Image (cartoon, rainbow, N blue to C red; front, side, top):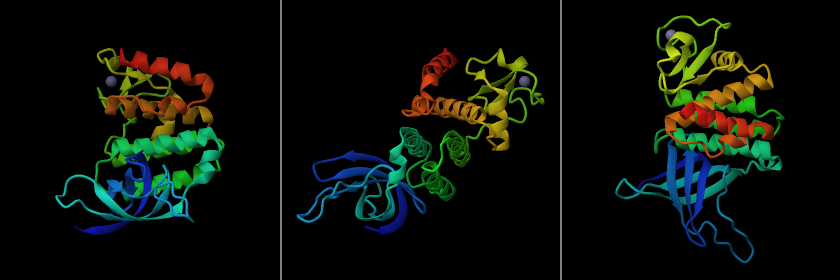
Amino acid sequence: MSRFTDHSICLRRHDYSETSQVLTLFGRRYGKQSAMAKGVKRGTKSRFACGVDLLEEGECVLSSPRSGAGLAALMEWKQSNIHAALRRRIETLNAALYAVETTAALTEEADPHPKLFDSLAMLLNELSDRTDCLASLAMFQIVALEEAGLIPRFDLCRGCSRQVSGGEPAYFSSTEGGLVCRDCEAALIEKRRLPQEGRLAVEKRSFPSPEASLAAFDVLNYHIETVLGRPMRLGKMIRPATDRNSTTKEYRNARI
Ligand SMILES: [Zn+2]
């Protein structure tokens, strides 16, 4: 049985018994690892233990399963950052939870993505200082999609390869992998309108206004949900409260 150490962020946690947890950890060196943390919630008379929390960052020692399949065992966990500031506002907490959900959904077990790890760690650090979380979150979606090899292209129409000017209606198709012009969209079932500000924000990796950040987040979230074939659990919690119903409607319409 081999042991290895990693710097990790907790993406998921489930209680397994009164004293144990099953964790999904995302490590900088070794990628996503599912691990059994036996006795991690067992306290002593002088020490209360609640296990490893979601979003928590720390140094772990993991032991690989003997057969090469199944869960690793968490041998040690040394907490380095609990990101407590994220929990002061529901907007930042939801944005952070959306980011770990995206990371878990778009990565495979034991497939390292140090760039994505750094982007997630940076996001968790900077979210708590921001009033507008959407620009940071949209940038994180871009890195996660790039790392998964799923980043959409907005430079040319994916159907006919022609330039689509900013003045004409543009569409986005997840299955086509990006921008679709008005001549090509009629033949497609899976598509949605692509607002100009969202297109520019994703293309230029620049978010000049809250509206641009929201439009970019929306189209990237739609893409992630279509690729996964299911809604993101936190997806509809990210928008401002007044917009949430319209997002759900838009999502449903896009799938009809
Ligand atoms: Zn076209």
